[in-house]
Image 1 (tube, rainbow, N blue to C red):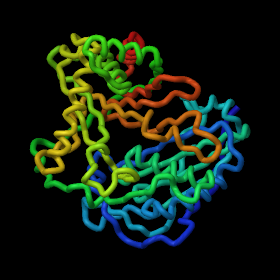
Image 2 (cartoon, one colour):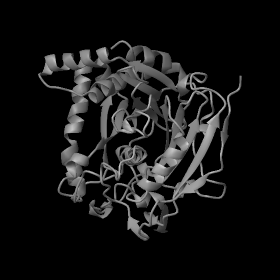
Image 3 (cartoon, helix red, strand yellow):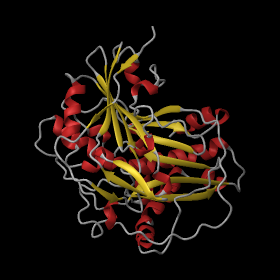
Image 4 (spheres, rainbow, N blue to C red):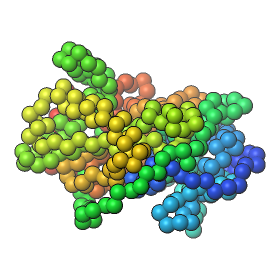
Length: 415
């Protein structure tokens, strides 16, 4: 049987009350090239009564305090994007599927419905890159539904986008106002002078990455945490353990020369470092990230124990405070760049940003997953919460080519 989704034409959901008309700045972190992308993801809910209507009304209410989201991205000066608070609203799509969630395995990979049918897009002639957020509600015959979101990373980081969607959930559940009051304050983030970039322009190679999904059990995570504590008398996080597993397993699987560089990159949250910089950190929904990178030789990672690799990661995170403060004071500029060759892998932790806690009045989602899986210039791994009631971490792997995939997955599952 073929499964199909019937979509309504996109409509604009405007703020439910009048909102300011103004042009407001983005922060220097927002404007970095690394976040000038759109992010797509889907949340799967087991049940809901008339969810499309209820969530549509909730968006209209949430867009009053979060009125910049109802505007558009503009670039009156080249390289300096801003937000025009026009009150136009967000594009919203209502859709129905001709099947139950069970029929399509609750949208587990591989997707049995093309992702394009589950995601919102603006009408023809409307620029996707100017939109701040769009939503599509797809209802299934079983009474379950999926929420497809596309948001601009220029305006939100993951935690910021989750904060806005939680506010929509607050409105959908009948609260008079969002639990967390939104804070813009992008102008408070320092804008230190950029260090001129030197050297040749970066080159890009398109790799034939394959997509795999692996689950790391809670027992495995806890055992490795305990081992780290036993050997070092220190504590480590789930992120530290999972990231060390990936870095070590991938280095072994791709078999680069002993002297070749292997690199790990991730964007670390800096919200805790912005107290005293922002008027208030709670409620700020802009980008609060700074790049963290580790470079070692292939031999160094292959010969190190998992505990030692965890220590490398903890050391890099511990240095974040000094580097970020130095950057805010104009002392350094990382360009947010790492060499984009096969030795590099980037990781992104979606398991804790808050999308799994969004409740539109029907309970939290069964599963949340990203669909930005078509990038082929740098290896990437995304950490997700597995579908309830499972525990542990689900890894969406897109960081090795076919010849290295089986060994990489086997190495990961040995820990």
